[in-house]
Amino acid sequence: RGVHVITVNDYLASRDADWMGQVYRFLGMSVGKIVHGLDDAQRRAAYACDITYGTNNEFGFDYLRDNMKFSLADMVQRGHRFAMVDEVDSILVDESRTPLIISGPTDDRSDLYISIDAIIPALTAEDYTLDEKQRSVVFSESGNEKIEELMVQAGILQGSLYEPANITLVHHANQALRAHKLFQKDKDYIVKNGEVMLIDEFTGRMMQGRRLSEGLHQAIEAKEKTKIQPENQTLASITFQNYFRMYDKLSGMTGTASTEAAEFQDIYKLEVTEIPTNRVIKRIDEDDVVYRTAKEKYKAIIADIRDCVRRKQPVLVGTVSIEKSEVLSNLLSVEKIPHQVLNARHHEREAHIIAQAGVPGAITVATNMAGRGTDIQLGGNLEMRIEEETAAKVQELGRELTEEETKSLQAAISADIAAKRAEALAAGGLYVLATERHESRRIDNQLRGRTGRQGDPGRSKFYICLEDDLL
Image (tube, rainbow, N blue to C red):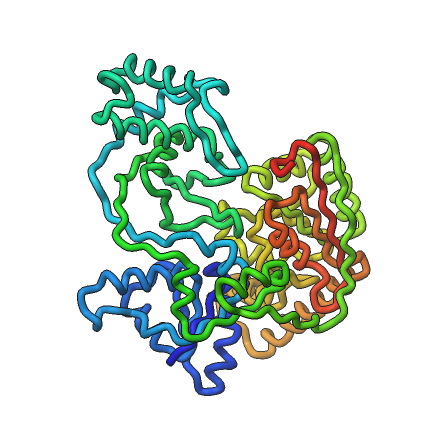
């Protein structure tokens, strides 16, 4: 009947399907994977396999698209029998109320967005009330009067703003205000190839094809002066919570579920069982250090990183947004400290950056992308290096390597990685240095869990200051 193995991103879905697929195929089972960009025939073939890997978004949207098909033969899914959810707390708790929406285009009103966007910068702090915790912003009384006045001057408004005929203008003004005051570039979204791409706050990744509804995405496009796509109307919608409740049997694993045990029991009727670690954890979790200003905090972080480079200890530096990762990257560049940056802008190089993050003295500055499910191997990733160096050798020689040359190269790489692993372990293992606390404690715990894996030594430390968003 088929088992769906669901994980949080395409990288993990592809990696796990390739890793574990070899075992399942040896045992006589078929394995498929659902990733972005497949057509219906490819999706149908993947769902017909005994085991199907994919992300929660892909499974959810396929279900919605199936419900919009005109005949059963066109559907790609074949029922919801059994689901195994990797990183189950991220999918069933963090994103449980996120609606998956399939929408269709409506009339183009891009001129109105641009006109209203132009008058928002004229507002002052007294003209609106901002609540960052609730993520809401509304016009104050003086703000309502001012926006009405500005609209009349711009020739957008005839009569009073609150006349029934002008109700859409009120909606557009509210969305433009939210776009300017609630949504920040390089934190909530990035602009890539002239498009506004949303960033997932839990995983730090771009959400391909996902757009904000009710004109909010268009208001952000007007703010960033990119091409304004037409507004959409909802054609089909479901939340992750309702989608996963359709499965006859549901199970999952994660390293950070115990804090949400009550929620799993109440909503999904799932019990949480703790499994002891394979080997004793040797990781040292140091106390948080608190600074008064961000400048003092970054100065201490740079000093700590410099010390690790001197001692050849690999460091994973965790940041809460793309913007913060690039600020820190600039500071490291000024100090001439070599490093790699892993955020949604560089997602194509993710596997390569992660493969090198455990090399002695390597500094990797990352967003939440390097949190969940990321396995950083001390000394470097053997498979990745063999693949890259074999390809480089083939290109250099202009021919395929002989069996003897391949064995010799693999032996040399294995010896080098073993030596580098010993060097990294002697320096204390991977050091996770977090530059800020996230709103979700589980995301902090996930970052910590990148070090001290399988009994290796390691340590983690959080640097915070009174200027952090959370404080």
